Each structure stands twice: as C-alpha cells, then as structure tokens.
Amino acid sequence: MGERRRRLLVANWKMHFVRAQALEYLKIFTERVRNITKTELVLAPPFTLLETVGRELQKTQMKLAAQNLFYERQGAFTGEISPVMLKDLGCQYVIVGHSERRRLFGETDEIINKKLRAALDAQITPILCVGETLEERRITKRVLEAQIRGALHTPSPPSPLPSEGEGSRGVRGLQEGGRGVRSGEGQGEVGVRGVRHSLDLAEDLVIAYEPVWAIGTGVNAAPPEAEASALFIREVLAQLCSIEIAQKIRILYGGSVTPANFEGFLQQPNIDGALVGGASLDPEAFAQLAQMAERLSEPS
Ligand code: PGA
Image 1 (cartoon, rainbow, N blue to C red):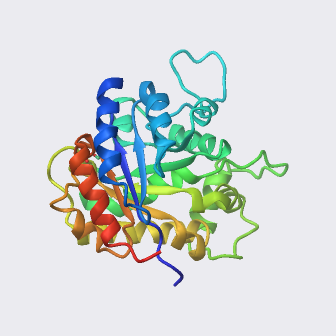
Image 2: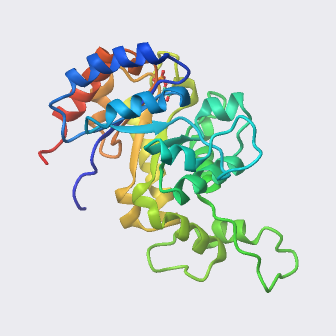
Image 3: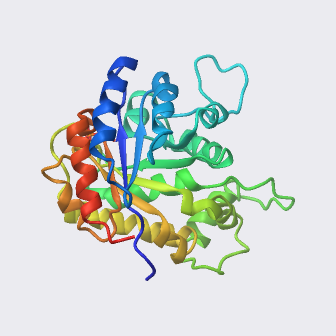
C-alpha cells in the first residue's frame, strides 16, 4: 500500500491578528516547533499578513498558505487577489471552498472549481474544503461526492461533435463514465479525461473534510465518523483518477480540533492531519497539536 502520507497541519487564522500580534505568535510558535521535521506545518494568515509571516517562515521549514484566491490572473477585479500575487508572496498552499466562503460569500461549486484550477495552474496546492451542514448530515456522502466532483471537474473543450440532448456532456461523462474508473480505464470519456487532466497534479491536492456543524462550535466529529467520510472521499478520488493517486492525496479533518481530541483523529488511517481554526490562534495549543502529529508520525 506504499508509504504513509506525510502528516500535515494547517493553521487557518481566518480574520485574526495584525502584524505585531502575528510576530509575537511566531516568536512563541517557532520556538516550540523547532524539533519538528516529519510533520509538515503550514500557516494561513489573512492576506494582509502574508508578507510579514512569509518572511518569518522562510527561516523555518514551515510553509505559507492563503485563505482564498480569485481565479483570474489579473485585471479589473477590484478587491480580489490573484494566484500570481499569492505565488509572488511565496504561498505554497491556498484554502479553497471553505464553508465560511460557501455560506457567507456565496461560493458555489462552480466558483470553487475555477479557483481550484487557477491555483493548480499557478502551482499552488489547493486545500479543498468539503463537508456537510447539520441538515445534510443524513446525506453526507451525497454532499461530499457532489462537492468533490464539482470542484475537480474540468470543463470539456468545445466538442466538434455535439450530439443532440447532450447539453452537459462533460458532466455526464463524469457522472457515468467516471464511476468505477480505475487507472487506465475510461480514457475516452470527455469528462473523465478532463478530470484526469486536472488531477495530473493530484499529489499536490489536499482535501479537508470539515463538517460544517463542527466548525467553530466546540463539537467535533467523532474520529470514526470523520474516518468514514475520509475513506469515502478517497473512494471518490479513486473513481475520478486512480487508486494510486487517491492513495497519495492527503485528507485532513477540520472542525473544533483541540489538543484534547486530536490524537483520536491522528489514529485514523485515512486522516493525515488537520485544518485548525480556533486552536491555531493560540501558539501554545497549535504547537501542542504539531508535537502530537510528530510523535505519531513514522520515522522518516
Ligand atoms: P475550527 O475551524 O477549528 O475553529 O472549528 C476549522 C476551520 O474552519 O477550518
């Protein structure tokens, strides 16, 4: 089954901190995680802090992430930030489709798809967030599958042979031909080929399973429940690309992760780390999470 995926811990600071606070945080945090080599540590500060934090992180092994991006490279898009700009600041990751963006800022799967592809184009690794709301809890799998397929779908190039009644050919290719596809199969399907294309870089894709009802609520998913969703996500990825690639993609859990519950998640075979909001605002707590991940990592 190959080697274990490298553990990954991402701090999502959301809309918190100004420069002095960020520098203070980093002073404490970098000291506490000096010994960490096996676990990958990533900080996602707000846009305004990317340069300040990025400069500090360059002195460490840690990496920089943005919390969002716009999908155009440049142009008249007042207030937006492009992948090129993020790359210029040294961002290696970008969070895409966080539930707060879906819910508060109207991001649809279509927008998320554009953002994800723009990130991949700029060689920034997207951390794609998926997860069900409380009302959707009975149909979690259906929601996750739709979000993943929506985000990873590559629109087909215009077909020279439009057949009647096939308005959504690319999507249909995904829904039918994509199911059960294993490596080497289904190459002829328009939709599948599209997805395969975008997943050429799939080893550079991260998925964060974040049940919306667990985000910022203090109510985390039970680790076995999160594991079931992570396994399901991996199965969907295997259908969309190949088992080999699906095995390499890291899947994080997010939603009220704290030092008190993190170990339960780390013990799950399909969960490779966490996307942390609240607990990442405290450098001591976030360093504790990093140490836990490191302790449970296999020797490198
Ligand atoms: P939380 O946030 O850890 O505060 O629940 C997680 C997230 O929104 O990514």
